[in-house]
Structure formats: structure tokens, C-alpha cells
Image (cartoon, rainbow, N blue to C red; front, side, top):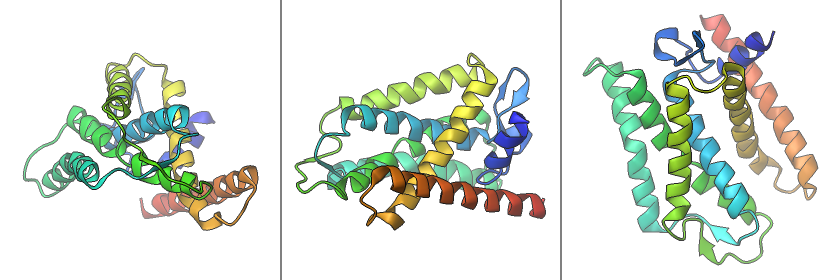
Length: 209
């Protein structure tokens, strides 16, 4: 039953092609290698920001840093388009790495905006020094390596990925309820709507298959 639940929500955002998915204990993950990389990256940066930036007055990265971060998203775009139009053949390792580069960038822009709703003064960019980037990168690379070489329990990691997907969508949805001044209520509503939205997407995916 847990397998069905995980694959159900994974199907909301992923094609779930088995040959493009990483294997753990001989079983394909609920999302493909590229999506796995994206959400490993998102998870790693979110954890870092939650631990070290939650109580700091922050804003989005500087223009120079934003440009650099956006460049890190380009490899996934090139790999995805290139393989889609048969310009070259990709592989799961490349999909995983380019996915992590893409995913770890996203929270740097979203997280400060969420905090900014409740902060009166913004004093520093979210990336203040090298460790604000290198720690999430190292964290992503460590998780990615453990997954690629099947060193993590299947259900533990697969559940973590689906949990990250739900949390990420919930954070995005939370912008719709910025006027709610009760954080717990705003989170509950956002998670409920995200689960409903992901369920609809998954059902549509199943109908189209």
C-alpha cells in the first residue's frame, strides 16, 4: 500500500519511466532520476535555510549571485531538450546531477519571499558567504551519491522525496494565503490544497497513460 501511495503522488509530477529512474534494492523510485535530483536539491537547500536562516532578516540573492544561480539551472535545460529532440543520449547519472543543480537553486528565491511576509526589515541577501552555497551543494552531492549507489533504504528515501514534493508545493501555495496570520493554519491549508492538487495531477496522468 505504501508503494501505491508513493507512486501515486510521484505520478503527479513525473512520467515515471522505469529505465530513466534510479533503482534501490532492485525497485525503481517513484520519480525519475531527473526529478529525484531536483527534489534532492530542493530538500538540501530548504534544510540548510530552515536551520541557519529562519530567524535572520533575509532577501533574495543579489543580482550577480542570482545570475550565477540561474546559470546552474542551464545544464538541466540543455540535457532535457537535447535528449528530447534526440540530439544526444542522456543517462541517469547526468539526469541526477543536472537535476540537483537545478533544484538546489529554487529555495534561495522562494524561502526569503515566504519569510518576508512576516519580517518588517530586510537586511542581507540569503547567500551571504560561500558556505551558504557550498553546504547545500555538499549535502545534495552526499545524498545523491548514496542514492545512486543504492546505499539508502528504499522506503526511507522514496518517502523523503514524496514528502519534499508535498512540502515544496505547499510552500508555493502558501503565497495564496499570506493574509492568514496564524502560521499553523496557513501551513495546514496549504498542505491540504497541495495534496488535492497533486492528487488531481496524478489522476490525470493515469487517465492519459
